[in-house]
Image (cartoon, rainbow, N blue to C red; front, side, top):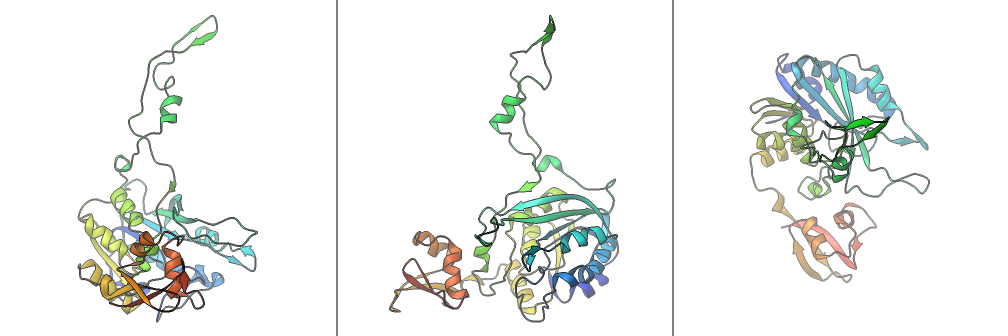
Length: 326
């Protein structure tokens, strides 16, 4: 269920020690327009704005619970802002357990010629009490790379014997069954999720909340997303048989998210139409992903999406693209 309201107010209505996992991505500082009623916070004001929510999250989390925060920084006046580091250092409400990096496998090229492409974001893992923390490593173990098996061939159990001061290695072949994942997560972005009625500016890819919900909770646990957006976290929780609740200040997003969670048909209300440069209709697609598959000369679905998202950029691959009512 997505509640239409301000999370700073709505979370105060929840009982203490009632939530198993909080996972969210709050509005980024001075980055995008999140729609009506949503005020964008400047980097200098961001920490003071969001820290009271950290206090409430610590209150509502169970001792075994986790808080997963996805956030990104920005450059201001040509320099990298430190507001995220200020947030971490000034937080005294909930304990920082670990830090992860999200590598966006299909991130849009960005940055100027004097900066590298930035295809990463931060994921911070906070906990209430590490002694009681739910943490299921066995669910996220990965197949080892062949190079890992080669390196450990001689060093896991049998290291041979020493003769005349020289180690004689065994020829015993020892294989690793599973290995722990590293702290860099390689999730896709959710650019195609913008291709719908709402066009939320910063949707999750469902891979991200699905991973952490599976990793840190059990079936029937309660998952909260304070900045629910179009309900991707809640949809992931529902598919994994978790209870869930979300708060969303933009009533259009909240309504859209509830329809999405309830399985109502919402995507096909709009289609992507392809025209020649003279404006003659050629073909219609359900979404930008389908259009891109049929038009590989466009670098990515983002090129098609920009045609109807931005003024002055209305062609791609030699065609015009419009998002129109079905």
